[in-house]
Amino acid sequence: MESPRAPATLADVAEQAGVSRQTVSNAINNPDLLRPDTLARVQAAIDALGYSPNHAARQLRTRSSRLVGLRLTPSQEFTANMAMDRFNRSLVEACREVGYHVLLFSGGPAEEGQRPDPLGGYDDLLRSTAVDAFVVTDTYLGNPQTSGLARRRAPFVAFGRPWDDPGARHPWVDVDGAAGVRLATEHVHGLGHRRIAWLGWEPGSWIGEDRRAGWHAAMDDLGLMTAGLEAAVADDVLEGGRAAAALLDVEEHRAPTAFVCASDTLAVGARGALADRGLVPGRDVAVVGFDDSQVAQVLGLTSVRQPLEAVAVAIVRALTDLLSGEPSPAEGLLLAPSLEVRASSGSSDSERA
Image 1 (cartoon, rainbow, N blue to C red):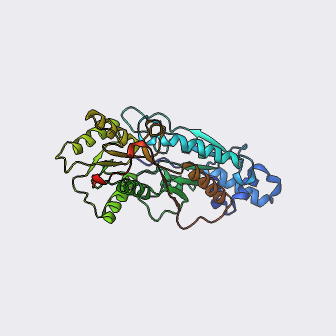
Image 2: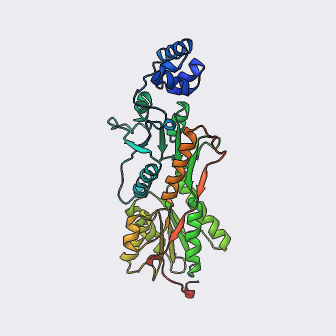
Image 3: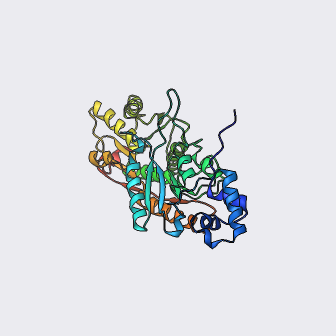
């Protein structure tokens, strides 16, 4: 069976008619500005491609529509995507500061036994030209959203690197997860810890592997052993607790005195494993998470904080450049995280060495 043809975009019409996007926009909104032969050529391209313009929407650079589409994914409590709420609010605020608006949409329900359509919702908005650009947030391995939107020549900026497509040319902004985990590892090392364990995600996550690489690099630079000090599990509190328990329940001289985790979710699990053994985070064993979620702040959990406000501002800046015709940079923008130190990592103790 043939795949359904992607809906025609304004860029498709411009290419078919051999004119600029602005000329197509004028044909739709201000036809009197065009010569009759040019107008006829554009109208013929619209008919041939089945393009369905929304007369209320215009290009963002003309200060008319001012809409950017953002597809929401279901929030999952006690998982790493809790931090996305802070990003979404930051994006809305960053857009408001420059007179833009964010249009939230969903991908629609999945059919029984099927996964949700990764491009669900996008085609409808492209067909109606209800938005001028998109922000794509879940750039995990194999995610077809960026490649699908690129094929449709839809303007978009990604929050996340094109992990599996180093030749991709779309603009992106991301956080240096490896650098954040390195900060966390060096922090607990500075407090006297030498057996520093890593609680990470199962293989298949580029983000998870990037964060794990930060732990490995820091441990190598510090001259510390990593054998027997790491676990890979699902991003789940119970799974994190079980993995931490398995690492703790070995001979005392091999047990970790600190946990650096790929997410606050896993750090909460490690914290629970310590409580089950009568151990206190920060006093007996240090625990550091990643994302600086509200849970981390309430529990006094040291955590790597992503600069999501700065990410949102950078994305909006990239969107305005993209829609005004400014050339995209050869590479995306990688921002450095920080470390929020709280009670769970404790204080210096030279005896831990």
